Image (cartoon, rainbow, N blue to C red; front, side, top):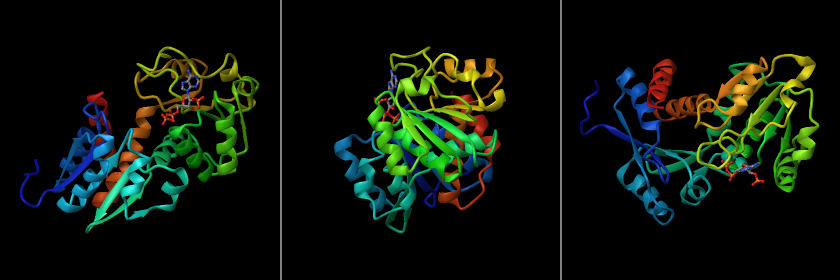
Length: 281
Ligand code: ATR
């Protein structure tokens, strides 16, 4: 057990609301395991206090912030530097404080791409991405970056088409186009359909029959970015159809591993952090 003393470095997740965050449990388990002199907390600044939160980070020498809803876009205004990838995605979820210089990164795209690639490589694969909101942007970037052909579908078709143009994706469309899709290798749900409390719990964003039309009828990979419930209707159906079902919490873990490396410079104990995350759910 690490002693907390005058040398201890402070890290935190900031979001609003944020008391249900599992990040402190997950990060602290990894930090404790390696005996590193950090403590990881949760803060909940309101929108109007966000700038002060970043000033406080500088003034107090807080080493690291993980930024979550609703601050991922607004945070960009209060940083000294923004990594080009985070700029392209248009959101920052990771802030490192190096001697008072705050640099923003995005690890969401890494979490998504790594979660898929634990199951199968993305290069050359056909990905159907459902959802063109904030989460969709990060997933689109990640899959494209790893060499996949990304087709994006969104309830509001214009939003999908706009993102496809911006990122140079392979295709875009609305729900009717998605209903005709086939020969896919990977499906990612980045909509809130199926999320507890979103009014669509128990629903699936994949139209009837789509899960049966994977490339060559082979098992594909289905990732649901929804975290609660852990096993969504989409993931249940994917599993029943013989595909590899990847839960959203895998993204949570994998993006956190990137963050851990960034602020500690050490290789994180992935298994320890995964167990802590699961126990906290
Ligand atoms: P996030 O940051 O989680 O991506 P967001 O930017 O609000 O949140 O995006 C929510 C996504 O879920 C959008 O793609 C949204 O579609 P619209 O652009 O048409 O709003 C999608 N979404 C939400 N509820 C939906 C529903 N009932 N059916 C289909 N798509 C839905």
